[in-house]
Image (cartoon, rainbow, N blue to C red; front, side):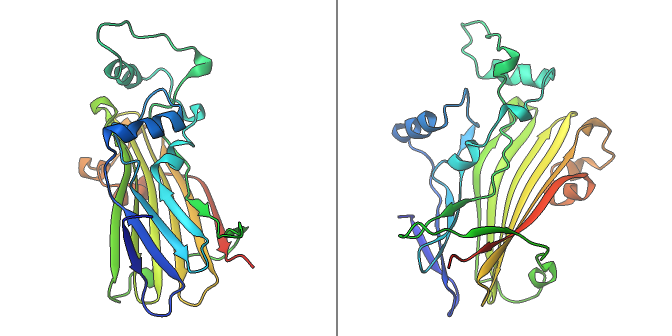
Amino acid sequence: MLDVLWCLPSGSVFTLRYLRRIVLIQERGRYVFTLQLPSHPDMTFAWNRLRIEHQLGFGIEFDALDALKLVTEKNYIPKVAVADAWQEARHTPDLPVPTVPESHKFDWTFTTNYKGTLLSDKNGRKLQEVPTTERIDMSKLTSRDPIHFYQDLCLYEDELSDHGVAKLSVKIRVMSNNLFVLLRFFLRVDQVLIRMNDTRLYWEQGQKYLLREYAEREHKDAKNLNVPTSVLTDPIRLSEHLPLVNAYFERLDFPQ
């Protein structure tokens, strides 16, 4: 059971559950064993999570452990000085820095294409992922309707040995007739690379599905990205300057 239960406005079929808590030392072994990664982000909020649960039991959840399970060597950035600095910073000072074979390179940026974890009801039914041409109507998110609930949870963050930042966070906003979630992985390797993977989730009162949009943006020559320094630390403004690499759109239909 998560620590906080929040019911959406009257008539909604969903409830929200979220947990904000640091990992205790005695609990750290659980996610270290589960992930089997050579290293972990400096700040891993393994117990932070957001759950959107239908009254019948199915739903979707966002948590750090499932996100880190998708870290893969295909996103490894080779021959970058900061990668060596990152490795040395995590190595025991009295021992030599190990040589890692190219076939075993680890993605030290902790890039993930995580889009949430689908939850089953007691009969094993989940939300059904269906490609769609329907889009989230962003104008509905700019209305002046009161915000009944807002939460911003950091799932993990690493400063890449002072050479940038890698951060995964999830935000939710609930208004009278809808809810909106933004899950964002943001990576900035100073003078090298900027990457942003966004998942947007939207549900409107009366609909029997949620819309989920996923977009990957990346600039591989960050030192030549002509933007003010203040923009480099502002993912919202920075996203406007990053080329779109990949995107897809789907409905998460309620199970029959």
